[in-house]
Image (tube, rainbow, N blue to C red; front, top):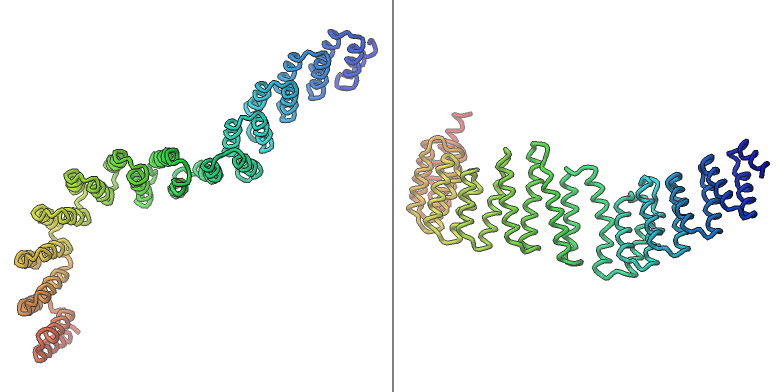
Length: 456
């Protein structure tokens, strides 16, 4: 004893002498002395060997609780996977499942994630599977797959699929196949949450499987994805980015209406995006048109009309006017339709497209005189953009009505305003085809040639 005492004082880092010293006291049944030697040993040299020798000693003494205390000191002093595995093995040996599970959880808590590999999670999952804790096992697999990079979890994912094949139903198995793709998209979003293409692809993945898994759960998941996506407002004031963002809202409203069949939520989506747009410099006419069309599908005619009117107050746009007119015409509201067209040409008095739409509307009702009156007003406006379109439309209207004399007079009036070679050409073709007047056709062509010569 004296010799060993001197040795451990002189060579405290040599494990073999500590081990022999403690073993001597144990043989002599001096357990208190042996315990003191072990305590001195682990203070002099903190390593795995000293702790394990101490634990095995207490185990031989049947002091199981003391073994646990020393194990707990070990994993705090030397937080290594191997130490945790030994602790877990010890608890399993004595059938203390709760403490074994706690050891796994303590390992996740104490060790940095970079030190915990897929083998640890497989070990943990196999343990839970042995205890028939299938739900716990599934949760561990899913969380582990979220934590570990894709290239470091191949074996884990393979084991997870095998586990699901054994214990999951058809829906759960199908969902398991999606987990890896979900994790991929979540990782991509962590890198750049402002990339709307990732959000679109992620949502598309979930929507494509809505009929393959539990529909109610799938709707909740997709709705959550949309809410996360629309919360990312573009940081760049570029219409390109805002357009992608707006289409997220549009798809969200369509999803709520068609898939979730939640009409009120679809309506709320439209209202919310209109509120957001009102705070920014961007306006998207398509939102108003889709919203009005949505309300029309719900047979809320007055609401749809109100949306169109609000849109025209916010952004008086040609497309909105045309859709509004189309809306009223479908409902057979001719008077309302005329009022909208009147507002249309009032808002865009020099836009030839607006006037042509109004003329064609009256023609569709066989209101020829009204159409002529509107055309006359349009061709007499001095600042009209692309007036030739209105003249052409007016002439074509008279030709279609077989009012060839009126068409001829219009050509003459047009030539008094502009002597463009295309007018001469069109007029000549008209006289040849519809009037069958070759002499007049020749005369018009000669006048056109003479004009072109003068203009070089």
